[in-house]
Length: 305
Figure 1 (cartoon, rainbow, N blue to C red):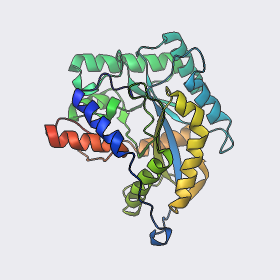
Figure 2: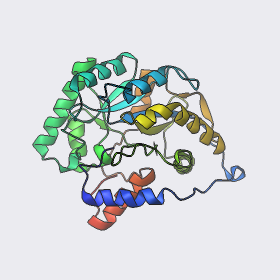
Figure 3: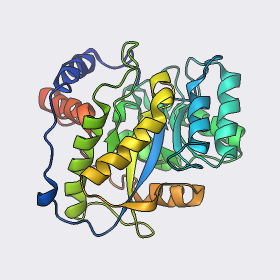
C-alpha cells in the first residue's frame, strides 16, 4: 500500500517494523503440534489495483497466472480495487471487466483521489466516495460490490457504520505478504518466514475455535497487491510457499487448496467479514504492530485494526 497519504507517525512506525521484520522466525516443532480437525483453503485477495501500466501490467500478469499455473489452474481471487486513483481510467475499467468476466470477485478498496484513509475524510466526502466506487464497479461489471477493505486497514465505528449503510461488509485478513509498495520498494523480504510465522499464529486461533468452517474447510484470507510487479513475477512461488508452510505446520489443505468458484469464494468471504466494529481483531505482521503501537501512543480511538 502506498504510504504517501498516511500520517507521519504511521510512516515512522512502519519503518521501525521493517527493521524488526529481518529478525529470524521461531520454528514450531511438528511433534508439539495439536491436530487440526478441518483442512484449510486459501482465499487470495489483492489490494490497490487494477494497475494502469501500459507495459508488463502486473494485474494482467496476475490474472494470467491465476488462470494458468502448475499449482492449481483456474484459481479465483477477490480484488479490492481503487476506482478513482491516479491511474489511467480506461485501462482500469477494462481490467475490472476482465476480472469479473474471468470469474473473480470484486470488492471496493477506495474511490478517492489516491490511497486516502477513510477515517480522515469528512462524512459527506466519505459517503460520496463510496457511492462513486460502487457505481464504478457496477458500470464495469454489471454488479454492485458487497465487500470492502479499508485503506491501511483503518476504520472506526463511524466508517464501519457507513460501509454497512452502503451495503458493504468489511473484510480484513489473516495473512499478509507484506508486499505493498513502500517508498518505491517493491520486493518482499523474508516471504517464506513471514508467511510461516503468520500461519503459525492463525493455527493457534483455529485450535481455539476462532475461525469458521465453511463447506467443510477453513477459509484462510491472504493479502497481496496486484499493483506490485514483484508480486506478479513471484505469485506462483507465493502459492507454493503457502502449501509448503502449511505442510511444515501440519495444517492439512483441501483437495483444492485455493478457491476456484466465485460462488464458493463469496460464501467463504461472507463468513469472514467483520460483524461488529467493537470487535478487537489482530492483523498479521507489521500492520498489527503498527496499530497496536498507535493505540498505545494516541489512545484507543486513534486507529482501528
